[in-house]
Image 1 (cartoon, rainbow, N blue to C red):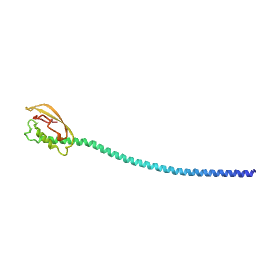
Image 2: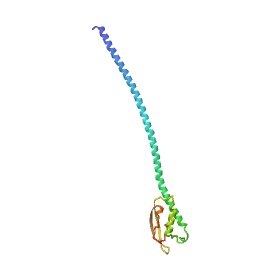
Image 3: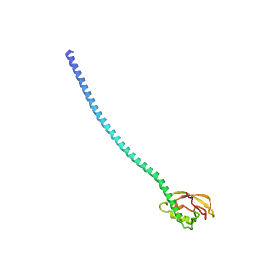
Image 4: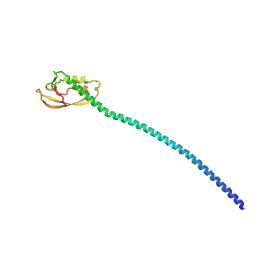
Length: 181
C-alpha cells in the first residue's frame, strides 16, 4: 500500500468516525429533547395533582371546620336548652303553687298545704307539648312541718321521668313546704 492509498484509507475511516459522532450527537440531542418534553409533561401532571390535592384538602378542611363548629354549637346548646326547660318547668310549677287560694296556702306560716289531687292537677297542667318528652331528674327538698308549724326535718325527693310522670312525692296528708333558696 502506497502512502497515498494509506492516506485515503485513513481519511475514509476519519469520515466514518465523524459520521458516527454526528449520528451520536443527533441521537443525544433527540433523546435530550424527548426527555425534556417528558420532564415538562411530568412536572405539569405533578403540579395539577398538587393543585387538586390542595383544593380537595381545603374543601375537606372547610367541611370539617363547619362540622366541628356545628358539633360545638350542639354541645353548648343541648345542656342550655335542657337546663332552660327544667328551670322553666320549676318556675312555672312554683308560680302555680303561689297562685293557689288562701285555703291551700297559709301566708302566716309560709307553708304549702297541697293535697294529693291538687299536686297532681298542677303537674298535669304543666304537661304541655313543650316539655312532654323531656326526661328530667329533679331533686326537690321539702320541710316536714308539724301541726304547730315548726320544721322538724328536711326530706329530699328525687323524681325521674317527664312531667307527666311526676306524682305526689310525700305520704298522704303530710304538709309540705318547698325548700327556699
